[in-house]
Length: 226
Image (cartoon, rainbow, N blue to C red; front, side, top):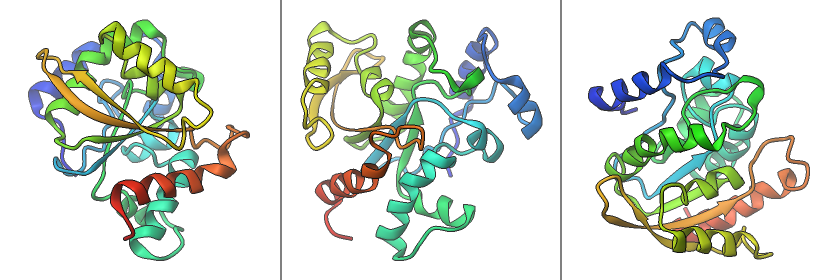
């Protein structure tokens, strides 16, 4: 798995040095530095990027995004598509994610698994946008949950934010996509097609059982039949 360029990783570390509310106990238990961001960059030319909210306990211990209970719900679908079996082990979960790009709104675990404040997301937005804009060349982004979807309006033109709000209000938001011109940190428009899905957490009682089918439909539309 690729790692962040050293200069960009150091910028994340400097920003994290001023970040209050990191779950230091989990980092300490995992033997990991609270300043190190958790990314799963994957291939630069991956067709799809998965974009979520922030890492949890399992993500810190393993050092990879989307590997906890919610992430494995997602990776089970990927594993069945590409390996034609049922996911059981962590090694299989990691193998399922190969070929995809992975990122979060803020790559640090918050206390109590509460979403980071808008202020924190705004602080990290330029850095995360730089990762998406210059470490990945794909176009399709599968967003997981409301926080991840609306991140694409932070520090963006009002018209883009309005498009996001309008799409989210639609009853079929999890079956349809939205193409936007995302403004990169260099001020250039980057066409992205957002494919919103509900968060795959088991705590999301309304959508948890529907998530595999919704994800499979998205992948079929983007990738075709494997």
